[in-house]
Length: 397
Image 1 (cartoon, helix red, strand yellow):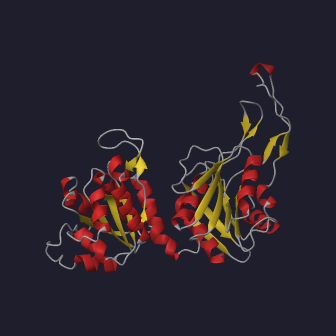
Image 2 (spheres, one colour):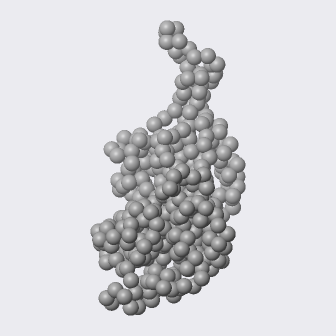
Image 3 (cartoon, one colour):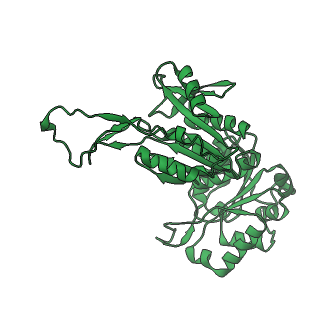
């Protein structure tokens, strides 16, 4: 519920992408926002008010002439934390840029004091037209934020030019970032997150690795982006979908992880080392696959580099560093040893033998440890755990 106590006015203009906005309204409501929907007359040709009322549990406004709506364009703006227009058609963009106020939505946009985010959606030729580009430039000069449009299939067929409205998850991520960044110490800061496992090759086929899925790193990166940060995620081999808005650097081995961290470390205001590097790799790499028929396979292993320890003397002055400790026993003692030895500001302890925690789960149960405090976080979805970790990190920035 990261948008609790936030109020969003969602203006829907008339385009086929209206069907996507139903998902936007539902997701924002699920995240705790109060969503007031305004439908233009053209939008009602695609999706009716009842749909949005069912999704948001709030009345939908459609006209300046609705009962009790005479001053809605003033009252809604005063209550809103953000005005979102999706889809924003070429016609709506042109009327807004020209200061035309001939319906409830454009009247609200002309009277607005709240920030505005729009998601353009139209035919690709209409979007590329000089008039549309000039109108968008006018709105951006006024401080309006724009998400999309994207390249992809349009109502009339395939296209290789922008015009398609961004997908609902992209719009929702932009809305969350717009709402949360102003209250976060991470806004405008550079955040470096590592996630997932590393692999050390025995031969062209076999690797030494661990069970890390990369979910914790992904959710930390997503949460930092939502707070307005410029986020880089260094991600080991993983099947997860990277978070929206985040720069992703793919790596394979622990040596590659170390190299990528060193490349981005100097600019990082916050370093969150959630990756689970393979602690050991083979002493010798075999260029050929060893056949099973050869019998037992004895492999000599050697420790890999301690990537987090290697950052100790290279961190940006004034930055905050967060480590992770996955243990099976003596967890608190081991975590505190790592906190001191690696000169960390925080370390996040979780136990591999805790049900629902650790690797390959969507939940986690952790203890956030600083030099002077401990915060026990109960079993929660990993995104909620990520928020708790970033809360603790923000207090130190």
